[in-house]
Image 1 (cartoon, one colour):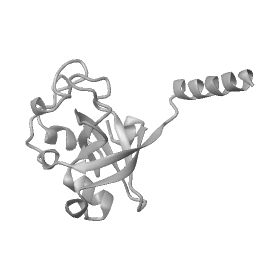
Image 2 (image 1 turned 180 degrees about the horizontal axis):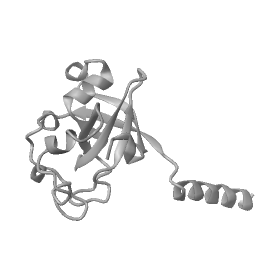
Image 3 (image 1 turned 60 degrees about the horizontal axis):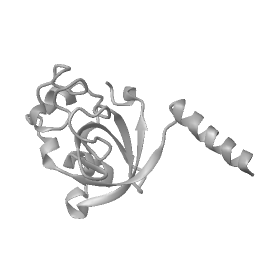
Amino acid sequence: MQFKILSLSLLALAASALGATTSHSVTVSYDNVYDNPNTPFSAVSCSDGSHGFITKGYTSLGSLTRKLRVGVYVGGAGVIGGWNSPQCGTCWKLEYKNGRSVYTIGIDHTGNGWNIPQAAMDALTDGQAAQLGHVQAVATIVDNSWCGV
């Protein structure tokens, strides 16, 4: 029995080490600050520092979003612990119960879940962001190539 538990633990650890994706349920809400391409990177957690966007030459949200794939958004994520987090710039797929999904790059810290542009939440909820306010979705970290970075 102990061997079986140890084997399952090692298998889970190996899958994690090989970059297997993990998914978890999150609360998704919106904030119009992420809709504004003129919002400066100095206003978000992933500003400067070795993991920041200013360090990579981006000055505003628009300077990044213009380089992303069409339909990829920026937003705040609970996985970003704060300034200069190693999670800055990670690409995530958010999938809603209606089968719709959006891809989002983490650029800011939020308490729990995801805080994304209203345009992204409208795409996720078929235009119901303002009516719903927040929803539950499944977040999966994906390779940055999905977001075009």
